[in-house]
Length: 237
Image 1 (cartoon, one colour):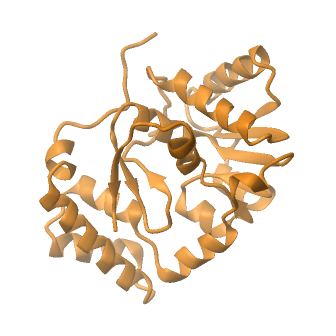
Image 2 (tube, one colour):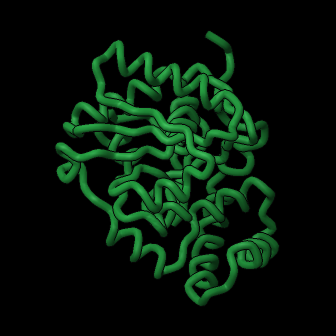
């Protein structure tokens, strides 16, 4: 076991720990929603709003993750399904998205709840995935979700070009075999496109996937409620 966590960055408590900063971010999200709903581009909107509220880079990152237009929010809500709809179904998981989000959450990093009800963090894969102390627990949480909702099958989809994607595939398959879980792990060159086009039900908090998928399930919200997870949560509205 290594000693890596996916926790807070130095300075995150200053950016997200004070009520004054959160109030500022909530106003910024409100402004972003206004601009996006009027078809302003996301990058231009976030720069405009970021300048107005004097936001730092990581605050702008959180702002972008939490924001959506009214049309996007409605569209995503219409496609969202409940836990009771999952019995005997197959779900496709946006692998790195869900895994890293759970690792961050378990590391007590700041997690942001956006206008669409999805949770997002400030971590990411930059060409390489590194296993952390919370990886095993994250996989176990997905297993609890799988068993409690009585899914027929769960398919993890990972980015093939990301270094170590083959290694995490092996770890998950070994775990599934040991625990007799009907899981598959697939490596795709373009996982976003694959999930949007080929999966009936997906689990992801990626905005583009949510906008283009057929149906989706909010697995992070489910796990927070069901497993009563301790979350360093910031509601951005």
